Length: 191
Ligand code: ADP
Image (tube, rainbow, N blue to C red; front, side, top):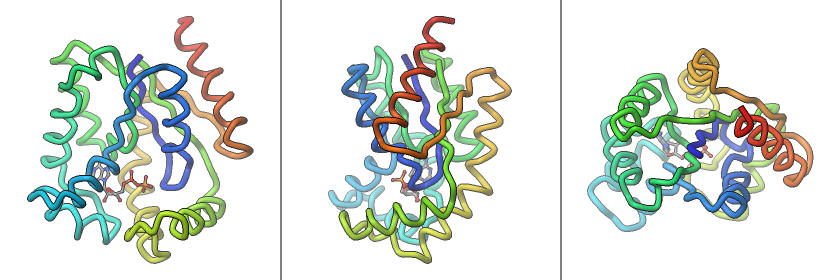
């Protein structure tokens, strides 16, 4: 199954993706993590991306497409994947469709985790303390939220129009949210 996970920063996408990976034995492809590894490794791409990420803005569509294309062509992605952090704007959504059409592996499910912005701010502050991410300061978080609302929220409608969207409430315990997600995936696989 090819799943695109959608949701605001701090919506719990990464946590839920990790649980799904175990459950479905599919690779978790997180563009945020791919970028952070490139930054850590000091590659040219990483150097270009770091400043943009530290402002909470989006890395260019070209860079992202080559990163995702490379990752999706690895053998472990041929049976499906859980994509987290991509697409983040409409141009990326269209580019992903074109890429997956070429690979004859279209998206099966777009899953949106809905949560309240206030709750998100609290969660991110907690994660900042735990992981020390350089883009988790309050100002940058606020900008990431704005970028999400302006650019990523339209992607939700894009998948809705294709009949691929499901939404789950991201409130409650991690396990509660996970059970909601499993319910949605169950329904999708029966149709
Ligand atoms: P978040 O917690 O905000 O969902 P991520 O770990 O997914 O964070 O991404 C962190 C940063 O990496 C983003 O703010 C952005 O700068 C960059 N990034 C990740 N995915 C993409 C993408 N698809 N397009 C452009 N930039 C991206």
